[in-house]
Image (cartoon, rainbow, N blue to C red):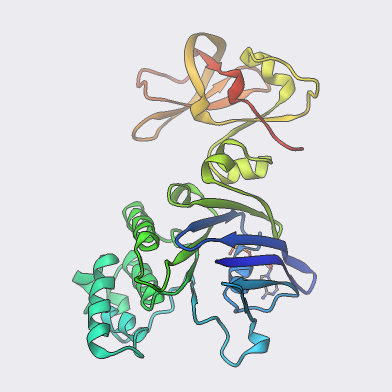
Length: 334
Ligand SMILES: Nc1ncnc2c1ncn2[C@@H]1O[C@H](COP(=O)(O)OP(=O)(O)OP(=O)(O)O)[C@@H](O)[C@H]1O
């Protein structure tokens, strides 16, 4: 199990990571989501033992993970960090790049394990090409294959989806899902932390989801819980499309008023339905999203909501009626 306790890191006047504590069980995936500059990469470097914390500590199976100031070769043998730039050896093949990570193993096992990784990471067909002859997605998968070759306890991924197109994002997502669920034969299962600024891909495979803001881990829970019950407007926006309005505007939606008119309320687009008995509004914009349409419906000068529909007969300017169940409204912290 990986644990971090009150980790803190300051760069001159910037508090990049502030009192972050977390724990990750074997065979689990954690996603950390936050805006640019919220401290995600710094936290990964601290967890990997690649940066020195000012305070707090990291432990892997109760053994302290030490920073670069305490060892000759920085980084823990059982923790791997895959950067956004992949850092592959440019002049050797995909196969040789992966095999290099297994150089201390016996030859027959090495060949067997490389074949297994090429298959898992869907790289068998491109194994003889050098990195510049493969796609971004294939480079990313080569970097992951190399990182997991000797079955580390922890795999840390910095923005694994950001440079990839949709098919490749889905391949990498499924690969990570398969990897953590594979039994590594006695050495324990690999756990994974994925850092991302877009939760979409991580939501479906993560067992836990943390929200980073200004160096702090402001919320952590199951993806469903954080998505449905974000504590702040920031956490709500970080986990998907959302409508945020002041409580005083709830009566416009035929919902009960509250005592605190300026309290913020969060409504996910899928919780708002077209309903002939609901509140009246006008469609201000309409976006085709493939499986559905997203509508922007204006109910008053102050209330314009996004909602989803599979109906294809809607037009801009059309009057519609919408309904929201009272239990869908989620109150946010100020
Ligand atoms: N080596 C450094 N020296 C000084 N400041 C740094 C250094 N590395 C990071 N920072 C600062 O620390 C803060 C957190 O940076 P970090 O890279 O961890 O955030 P991030 O959430 O990973 O951002 P991004 O998503 O853009 O990569 C930022 O304000 C950044 O400018």
